[in-house]
Image 1 (tube, rainbow, N blue to C red):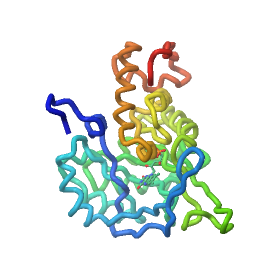
Image 2: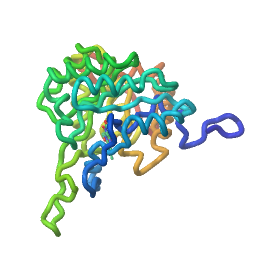
Image 3: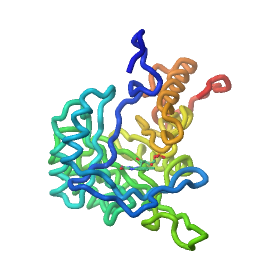
Length: 293
Ligand SMILES: Cc1cc2nc3c(=O)[nH]c(=O)nc-3n(C[C@H](O)[C@H](O)[C@H](O)COP(=O)(O)O)c2cc1C
């Protein structure tokens, strides 16, 4: 996806560090009853219910394309029992251009989907099960639907997670006042987008303080400034989800905003920004008036 001069074209994947797949389960899942998505004032409420064609179909029809993608692929997986987490993780081991497994411990829209991200003991057991199945790095995706995320993050780290990603969606509800019923077919859903950004930032900030493994931040990232907030809170990388619904070029814009930020501030690399907002670091005094981040 380069032009005649070899420069990446807008919308290409070259600015992404990696692309995370939709969560794959061992067997095909129809997903939750529709409607599965509704707009809210500052984000979306969704209840997809892990709709996906199942691991065998993904391996047969999607995985062969991954080798030629311009960025590495992270395969997101979810299962119910330790043995099936191990089996599922093993199915994606050794594929060309697959860089890591993200264990979705935190889907709020399926029965039992949150179990592995609410109870530290189950988190530990689940991450261990995923590690058993794969030689790839394992990223544990955590939930905001908890009172204190730190014991859960520590349990994932202790079980061998190579990184944490946070946050999954925040449980919420929209009522259709015409019918007097919940709007989504499944009733409740998970909120994403800018509405959850301050919540996500707080979780990243707290967790980065207690773990030694990298944290990947997400939740309402739609600009370089948003990405910088996550990095300053302690994330080593960010993911972008909902913002791509509105703007397919958002990732390229975020990446070029971050490059501009580095060149104007004189920071040598993004890693110099990571954790700046933490109390024990000296905050950066940067005049951003002329930086369009
Ligand atoms: C329509 C939709 C589908 C999603 N599907 C998944 C999924 O399959 N697996 C997963 O781990 N997270 C899923 N998420 C959650 C996102 O990956 C992300 O954690 C969350 O939306 C917050 O980031 P954002 O505000 O940038 O979207 C989904 C979110 C949305 C809006």
